[in-house]
Amino acid sequence: MTMWVLGIDLGGTKLTSALFNKEGDILARKTDTLGSLRGTEVGELIIERVSGIIRDVELEGGKIESIGISVPGISHIDTGRVWAPNIPDWEHYPLMDEMKAACPDIPLTIDSDRACYIMGEVWKGNAKGCRNAIFMAVGTGIGAGILINGEVANLVSLFNPEKIILGGGIFGPAIPLIPAIREEAVKWAQPVSINQVAIEQSGLGGEAGVYGAGYLALKSIS
Image (cartoon, rainbow, N blue to C red; front, side):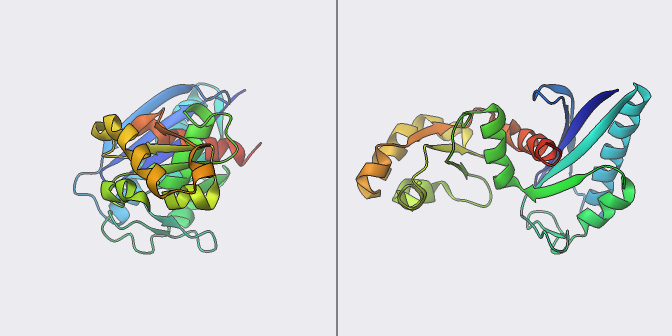
């Protein structure tokens, strides 16, 4: 029986699902627009999409071994509830309980989108081979100005990473500014640390979240 993992990337405006093999190849992928959906409607869409993929895989004689979900906010490990400020009525949404009820026999892990971004980059993006790396997401939750005024520097001094990966929903057009961002960071960061860190764009772009969700699923069973 062929074994796969399922990655689900929930954003503020869309839901992306991807079926991965253990090597990290995407075997099937679908994106749904959230539109005006809110609260339980978003939860129902996730369950509908996951249930459909499970059914299709089983019809082909395969099995989904684990599911990982990236959410645009905070996933509370103790309660399984999610806070997602960009999704109406998701202040304390019981996503874990709903998913366990829908697919009780499949291991499930939920984490924040930023955690999944860096996991995706470590697995299949520009942070491959790094032991210490940071993903700075520039989207509705972070302003690009924070990166330019040296906030990119405080993190360098504190964590001494090998790479800082820049990406997120609105970062794409700012890729040409990476040399200027580094130039500004050099002014404020601890000099030894900043000379040891590479600042790069995301290798996965908008796919970082769903790759990270897939890797999250894979890690839970490996």
